[in-house]
Image (cartoon, rainbow, N blue to C red; front, side, top):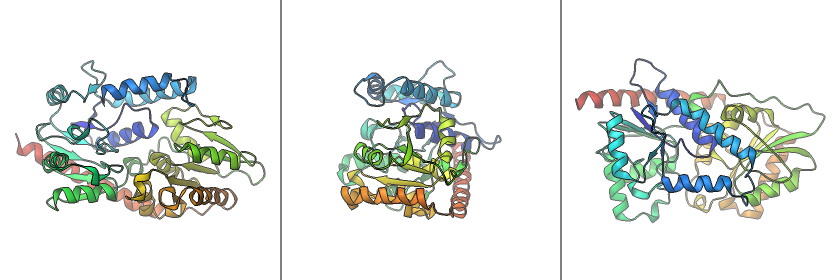
Length: 381
């Protein structure tokens, strides 16, 4: 069985969700064997390499190169490269389908946001066509940033035909759930689960939060994509706290060099984590660290974000700010106030019960994924 998800991106969350998905699907040795398929888009791959070398990118430098190399090294043992093919170019759809069908009996699409059409549009093989493999299922797949209202009727028909051929569908957030349910008009049962990193727990990497001593400077970890918010955080807190940045570098902070395992472990060492990354939020949850998560993308003034959806499920939505609906000035102020609160009076951690509930539900859905695969493969022999 091939797992169609993101493995090649320069992104800690990408490789960690792929790792967690691989480990969950292969947790029972009596089941079918699953391998990650190293899919990529040639033009995206080229842009990624150009970005790594771009001196105008504030994060470019030896640390960024090292981090990206460590991501590739981390995920490599779990990807299918046994025939010497290091990656599969999915922008050549016909060639990709022929190759994948020659290698695998069936496919799992997910986890991660592979259904948002950022990858070669509605012809993306992440919406697995009925000609791909003998069985197709999805596990924690997301289309979260996809603006459904902008899709043409032709695109909707293509996506509908794909998903109608799936034996079982599970998704990662309420926005994707509503989209798929509407697309299939209630014809299929759809399960909603949390991200595989939360279901798996990454216990081999996680370092639980250890508060700093009351005396001395507090420590803040920033994993922030929105430059205006990030710069505002540095300006506001640099005199009162030591600030480290990860993945995206900010002047006035220490930019961390971390492999994916060290990245997971790092979150528990801080008095407050601030992030607008989904998997930055997941790592904060797993480490039980005080954290503040926010969204600022315009689409989240219209649709619920994956960060908001997960934190609502875990009862942690009090740590979340939506700048898209609150406005920049009020939103920035709310983020700063929450960070202040996390540093001065960190809340008691109360989410273990909710995490365990979501984990058990995710594992129950995983068992149904396995059953669907076994039944599907037996039925088409």
